[in-house]
Image (cartoon, rainbow, N blue to C red; front, top):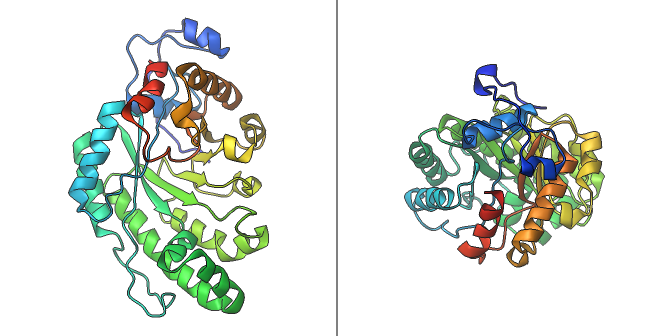
Amino acid sequence: MCPKQSSAAAPRYPTVMTRRQLLLGVPALAFGAKLTHKQRVDRALNGQDVDRPPFSFWYHFGLEKFPGERHARATLDFHRKFGTDLVKVMSDYPFPKRAQPWYRLRPEDNPFPEQIRALELIRDGLSGSAYFVETIFNPWNVAEKLSSKEEVLRLKDEKPQALLDALEAIARSEARHAQRARSAGAAGIFLAIANADASVLTEADYARFSEPFDKMVLEAVKDAPLNILHLHGSRVFLKRFYSGWPAAVLHYSLHATGVPIAEVRRHYAGVIMGGLDETNFRKLSEEELRRQWRAAQQAAGARFILAPGCSVPNDTTDEELMRLVRVLG
């Protein structure tokens, strides 16, 4: 489900084939001036040609114990250093733990106040030069962080209604956070789902215990132009996400799942995000990065954002990140 974009946001440019686009084997435009970050993303959302694909990458800064100001500064510095077209804001502040036992939860009006402060500062620092999206980990993941993976699975089996009630309280809290993020200027949310995977849950259990709450979070900001579904794992139930979700972008790991982008494109008409090997990112040469980029873009077509399939390792160096920046020119 792609967002509607006004024609004013996508200016026309003279058509001329460039060497890079000839190498990619896709229709091309030569641009009188280099596109801005927003223009690249807008054109990808609309399925229009770009000078190069919009790209992003990210890792966890490990600043969840510090005020939002420091988190915002790290995010802005990262974007400015590497020139990412889409600013994917990390969100590692913990959900408030107020109850004993942990699963006796009530919806929170503002569960992540420091994150909202960071988003406001990121908005001000970007001054409209690039879109940013807020990361939200789905309710199942939050429940795991409040207890443990083993405890959530135990509760599912022994007290399923208690788990459902807890997940609903988390989902309502996160829905309110998503709306606050939109009010703070985010173009959408990056909903991270790590349990729609056969190594975590059966598909039936995902459908019962997680999908309704994941959709509840997204529905709260269904009109956002840049909602992203991030599907984490190696045995993802991809077919559940090809339609029926208020998101413009589907992000998954080609290398973890082994599912070709061309296969996803046969079923999914929206923007595909991914293509780069996140696990081996630090080892990839510029030529290997170029090869992965070209193969992914050719398979995905115009509706495409280049990115690793998940966060790159937290110890990735600036020089290793710069390889991709140089490849993209």
